[in-house]
Amino acid sequence: MIPSPTVLVHLCSETDWAGAQFDGELRPPSLDLVGFVHLSAPEQVHLPANRLYRGQSDLILLVCDPGLLGSPVRWEPGVATDPESMLFPHLYGPLPAAAVTRTVPYRPAGDGVFAALPANFPTNGFG
Picture (cartoon, rainbow, N blue to C red):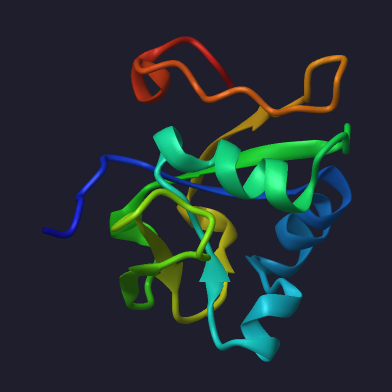
């Protein structure tokens, strides 16, 4: 079964987001390297955050409306260390700045670990 969350999130630096706002879209290196932009459902974003960005303090979550992404999203396996059968959304095209409905600072705890987002993330007052 493919999930259908009401929002998807993308992790990036504040600097990358500023550039995307100027350019109208975000084109992270993964788009050229593997052909897609890594996205996450809110409940799984802490997994790639801890794997790739542990301790990094300039990250924000781009909260995206899946209906505004403009390119196909495919739910595909992550890496072997992710929970079994977990699928991640991959956007097969650039991430349009217009699809971002809000941004949320995403900071690690003192030990550098990113916490899972609260279960009510899409509807709480962040951003």
